Length: 244
Image (tube, rainbow, N blue to C red):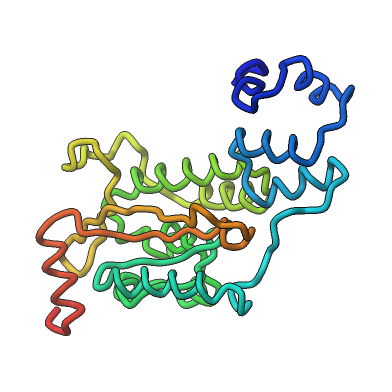
């Protein structure tokens, strides 16, 4: 985005924006918020920008256990339970697992107990003692997750996310050249997971709180998985009913 484009989008003069950028003018509180909104700056970083400009942070940061977060927790529980029998989970900004529905546990059979003590969703997926040995399209899925994480780390400047990228990249993985084309017509990257001698195939969707005014809530990610084929749907339903 050019300086002129940003000035037009925020409805200020390019001259004034140039003065703000070079330090010749001090931005108002409203200016900081308008610029950060147009640049899609995450809420935590908006607070840092306000502080750097000499203003108090605007957005609170509450624990999910806070009574004021009861409505959000209720919404999360509704999504998780309403999505069953398909797997669904909630992760924080660093992909630590916050909650999961009953559809997730069967997928974690065989995962090393140490990985489940303080579970990180991406570590569970790609660690050699996690799900990685059972992911049929590991190279493709690994590329998808690491690319997504790297983009997030660059956007927020979080050193812990940078470290997680380095850690995930250090795990062994087959080369991308060995990946066979998937059968979804290029519309999405499926997760293909071995369950015994059968393959479960899922498509994932991501849900966020679009109107969040709390830092913690704005950083939550609800990841829901849907069966990508009829065979997967039948296997998951059978497992959930105890017939699998």
